[in-house]
Image (cartoon, rainbow, N blue to C red; front, top):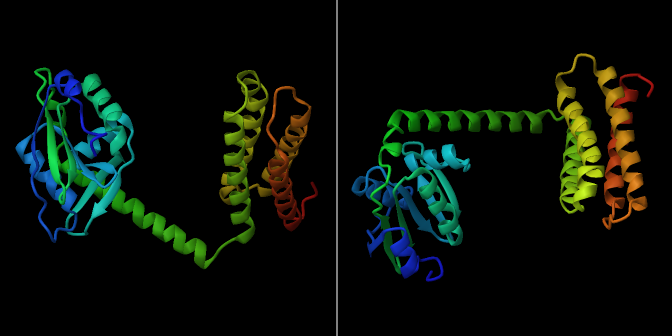
Length: 281
């Protein structure tokens, strides 16, 4: 834990003061959220982050602010009676992540490091330029609306998963799975390419797999499926052509055999769909 605590120089630079932490009430649905609520009551207008294991968690107002300002992913936690929204990131990165936010937006903050067993130390910024008004604009109604929206998304996702498992279109499902897997694998390869190849050859790959993914995702709602499948088949053939070029490109040390195999499997699935609609490729 000592590695994550601010140094003496950092405490001076960021105007931090430290004191022993508060205890979490046992038996709560989310004791870390309870700590955050107590700290928020003591320090209104501050970002509140509390250590939980190897992560720092922010709840409700803090979570919404970080999600809005820095695009952290919101998660719905807690119980049905007492739900919360939460963001989190590794505690080892909190200096790099949090202090940039503070410097950019001027929001004061509170960080609680440690555990209930070892004791918590609370670091509170006391910068005179702290902008306490930012979090005050996040009303309880905004938090309630976000929680409701996340609940609705969860129900939709559950219903969609239930529908898929109960009545799967196995061919269409495999088509999406193969295309998504191939897209992920190619993206990893493109990232590792030399800059000049990434800007030329890599761009061709990305453009081609992008068209393939678009066709695959549109297939279920497409009225003219035969025409879409023809276009998809042509794009898969184009992708196989690009992959076949890889061994002949100087400076490209990546092996594309596995990617080519995925492209061939994808082409077979497309061919099966074409035959099922009685359309010749």
